[in-house]
Image 1: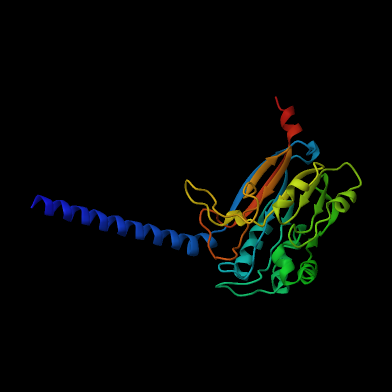
Image 2: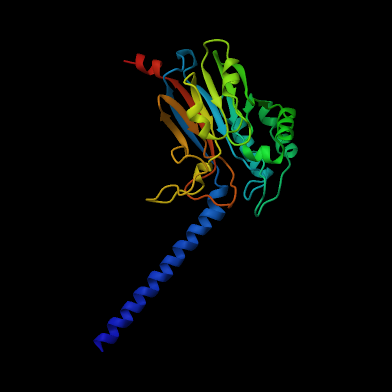
Length: 293
């Protein structure tokens, strides 16, 4: 009888373990496929830069990347929500790091570049928006995506540099072609910077970062989606770039990189532990920090 009671107890424990595991898996799937991909967050980053001048201390830039408009949870209604938040932000400019469209849409609806760009007009009417193209943009038709963005007032910089004056700060944005598809021309782009003002390099894929010269005070990129999935105790299993360039601020060999976790999804419409994000960068002068008592 005791043996029977112990056996029944083990069976019940096993059943509850299986049920509990199934519930956890179901909750994880619901979170990753239903809740998290539509949970837009805004996150602030203060980045101290050794080569950022004191007169530019406190400059604020919003960064968005990989909207993949048309992917699940990322229709034009979500794009409008993003534009509203960017328009209301106190940033001085917006940087867009590519992949506005998506090549193949699983469980989504393809949105043409012209339609995507038309929804940016309220933003470009309010503040300057600078952009580069990503691999998905080139896979669809990079020239067409560029024309659509420019028609909506976006300043597209593909292997081009532009001098920017914002709130008493003069600096350059060096837009570099995508590492995979855009044929980046780093030498020619930086050669166009004809004074000593600081440079912010903007590109899609962070794998270009090791090749970007120390002349750039900061490099901004996207592409990785933050890995889309970040598991407890494990981290990010898969990243479409070098593993150390997942998301956030990275300092390597005296240079600084910021990688946006992005907005949309590709391949699988899942995000877990990596919500869609508008990243708000406040650029601090390390020299200003050093002068503080």
